[in-house]
Length: 341
Ligand code: CO
Ligand code: ZN
Image (cartoon, rainbow, N blue to C red; front, top):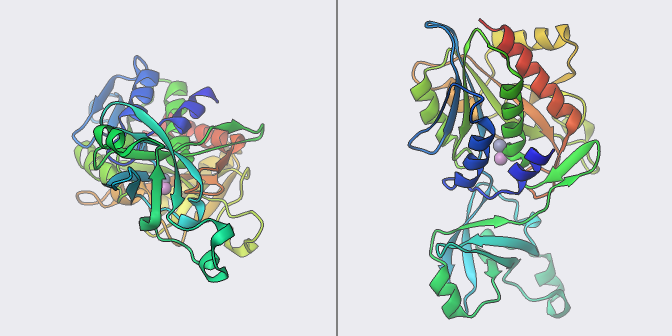
């Protein structure tokens, strides 16, 4: 779990995936036939096969939701713009890192620009602030802040990774859990017959951008999106809305708002999971998209499926995945890639 811990704790918002990319590059160097970076910052690992072999592209995104500095006020407080979708109710009283242009990682806290509870009226206490109401306090004099920080600098939430035994929890498991799964799958793969393109994509959280350009360049015959999906099996949610359950196996996506998985591919994956006795669940996600949605629609279209990891508390810093589900995902992908021709 040390690799997943590293991947979870490292910072990388859309367009600033360089630190994540370095970790993955180090893991894969010597393990694949080619490792390249493209114009958008996607890292593409290739396992070559004979000329004319089937081309399978997998994609897991490196970016996490976060912020960019939007404004620095006269007292040195920062206002931010979010890159990716946050629920502001999860953003109160957070520790943050401002990755300053000066080259320093500055620590600070983020709170809504409102009065403390002790001096608020009952009306004020009920109001949910907007993203634009949040301010970052670095505890530094304004001159110092202005010297180090520039508009556009990356800001990430700070959260330590925890191994709780059966499950792990931390930030950015969306989608570093899939990056981990893809790395492990490549490590265990023996000479496959198909040509494998493992893409660690950029800028998924702002609209599947890295997967779009990488798929265009790769021209795959089959696309496999890898992402987390909602496990809504926690208190306060009705069972008929649970999407998936934690620890009940890899999720095979029937559809989400970005794609309908290609029917024959879905059937192939179901048949393989049944044959190898790998626990799986079928998933329909009413709202949300993945890299699979981009791959499927590139050029004249690509048969594509998305394989998901059930995850609790998505888009918070307490995202939680089950080790058994990670293992089921790695095993299923491994079998699929090994036999595909
Ligand atoms: Co996400
Ligand atoms: Zn994701």
